[in-house]
Length: 81
Image (cartoon, rainbow, N blue to C red; front, side):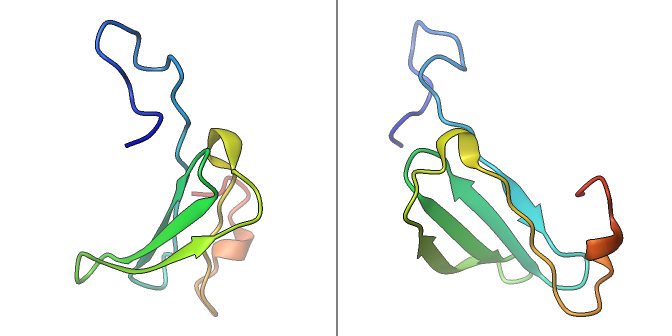
């Protein structure tokens, strides 16, 4: 993986962060690939990737993600769990 930790360095040297988001009302989970401008969307129930979204920004440091589905109440969570 590009930007992964390297032997002999600290785990955070040259590493891009990832962001993760999940909806309490669906089986979907989204994970950003910091520095690459990609968000991978997974079906957690089936443990398989559904799609990869390519964005026009590198998402340095992972970006910020939110994943909500209609009626899940996630929009009312001020902490963003």
